[in-house]
Structure formats: C-alpha cells, structure tokens
Image 1 (spheres, one colour):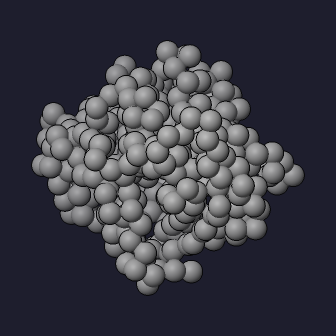
Image 2 (spheres, rainbow, N blue to C red):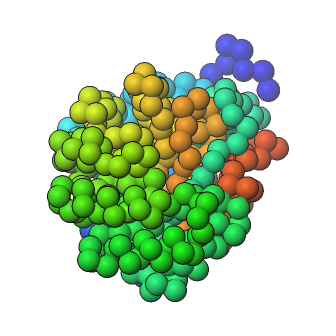
Length: 367
C-alpha cells in the first residue's frame, strides 16, 4: 500500500493474560516461582493486526485495558513514538517503574509490529538492520534444579551449538562453588560460563565468590549484589578478576535508571528488558545511551520479542535465551525461531516481529 501522506488510525487495542505453569519448579538467588504470566496485546489498524506482549501480571493487562488502549486509539499507526509519548504522559500520576512501564512495553511492541505489517516489512528492516543474526547464551540452571538437571540443561545447550550458558546461584551460597564446578564439567572447557546471583550476595561474599569462580572460567557475573547497590556493583567491577564481566540492568524501567547505572560505572555490560523498559522504543533508546558510553547492551529474557530490535543494534552483547520464555514462545507463538550455531536469525519472510499468536493453544491458560 502507498503510505505517503496517509494516516492509518489505530482502531482498537485488545489485551489478554495467560498464566503458564513452569515445567519444573524454578528459583534464583532471591525468588522462586511455579508459573509465568504472559500479557498479550493486539492492535488493529488498516486491516492489519499488530502483536505485542510482556511477561508481567494481570494488573498490567488491567492498566492496558482501562487506560492505555484509549490513549492510543485514534492515533496514526505510523507514528509510534507519538503514541509512546502519549502513554508515558498518561501514567504520570502512577509512576514509571513497574506495572506502568510493562504495560507501555506490551502496547509499544504491538504498535511496532502493526506498523511493520502495514508496510509489509520485517521489523528489523523497518528499524534498519545492523546485523544478520543475534548471538545468544542459554539461560536457566535454576537453583531449584538437582545437580543432574543442571548439568543436563547446560550441557544440552552446548551440544546444540550454543557456546555460552548461564546458571543461577545464591539460594545457598555455600553450595554455589560445587554447582559451578559441576556446570563446568558438563559444558567442557571451551564454552563460556555465566553466573547470576540476582542480588543475593553481600559485597564481601561476592568478591570471595568471584575469585573462586574465576578459577572455573566464569566470564560473566550478573547482579553479584543488588542492582540498587550501585556502589557495591562498582566495587565488584573494580576488584573482580580480569576477564570477568559484571552485568546488571534487567530492572530498568526508564532511561534515568540506565543513566544512573552507567554514571556510577557499575557494570561492564548493561542489560535492558524490552518487556519492561518501554518496549521496542525504550529498548532502542537504552541502546543509544549505552553506545554513547562505548559499551554493549544485552537483552534480558524474551528472546523472540528482542530479536528484531537487537538486529538493529550496533553495540550488542549476546542476548538471553531464557528457558522459561523460550518454552512459552515456542508453545504459544508461530514463528519463534531456534538458534543455529548460537545465533538467532530473524525470518525475513514474515512481517513485523515474525510471530502469530496461537490463540486456541493459549485458551487453557487464560486468566
């Protein structure tokens, strides 16, 4: 279709929520869960239907239904940044962190998918493709797993050609060195090993563990202390063994969060989550901010949501191929791609983010 001087108005925004049980109990250093809630957003304009989603809570779906749908309805579907600004303005009295930003994220992804579908383009081509594929790291290794389960999962990813894997630590710090040693035995000497404490350690614990982990070839230490402790992160970053990258940022909901973390010199690799930080729009803005510091950005979780946006980033670190979200995206979306030799390639034959929602398959999980 010709879009020159054309306004295609957003006609409706629909939202639904689904609670999907985990395949096994999952836990990290500070939290445990047995289900994940998926909030799906669908935006309609010009005969096309855009798909977005976030991993959040039913309160997020309520906010989209009660406020954000009306905020973007009637706006030009091609003017996604304008819709994003309008949504941010609408939640002023609610605050940006948390549910409000996750709600904006789901709608923003749907609007970018809608725009790309109206133009019959894969989203990475609409955004401007900087790379043909995105490197991933396998992520899981939950502290709730028995040792055999841990080794099977991590070793399985390496056997599939993913050359880097991440495991959870911190629930029982005294057991962590043994678990990391078992993980190294399972993945071999060549694969990169990442660990994620989810803020479970104290500063001194983290420093001691970092030295022990370095002997086992750990090259990534995520949230060794709370991500709110920027001084602590900076301490760990300054004193960690050479070759060990300190990472954090998954709880960032706005650019000010990322700026504070970067100003503090708290991380070697900045993380951001497009399902939390304002969707595709917020994620790409975080990428620009990180690039201005000559650093790399890594996407947290939701690999199918991030794939096309990450193809547009010049300063990309491998992204998280998170077990729980991979399982859900394969189960409930047609078009979810699998890695080949540790890389995710967008399907350029499919417009938008390349996904179609399998509504009938999801009905059993509806809440």
